[in-house]
Amino acid sequence: MTTTTTAPAPADPAATDADLASQPIGYWSGVVHKAVITHLRDAMARVDVTQPQWWTLNRVDVGDHVTREVIVSGLADVADTPHDASRAVDHLLHRGWLGIDAEQRLHLTDEGRAAKARIKELVTGIRARIHDGISDDEYVAALKVLRRMADNVAAATPA
Image (cartoon, rainbow, N blue to C red; front, side):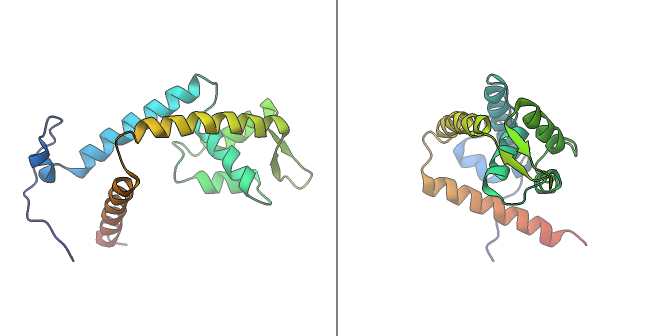
């Protein structure tokens, strides 16, 4: 097990590279989360779509027997509120991007497939801007560190 002996310091947006090891992960992960989510949602809003709608289009497109309940359950950990996923289904049905059969299974309509392709192009461009100057190896290393920190917290949390 690798541990650090670096003493923690208060969050400092101007911390130098030499001081980053002492910076709090909670602060920096929050800064990144807010910046990325705001940027992504603002870009999606300009084309009249929400992030939960994008997630829903993707889940419906790759799944068999996908119902509203499957979407709501599958997005529970990432949606901002317990109602976001169900509302996304309602909006997409209203727009004609989703259809629903007699067994309550959801499917993409032709309009939904076209919209998903347009949104994927948008999201791909956003991802490229966010990842500018970051190699895939650096990105994977950063995610591995964050995953390990999440696992460490989970292991240290009483049941």
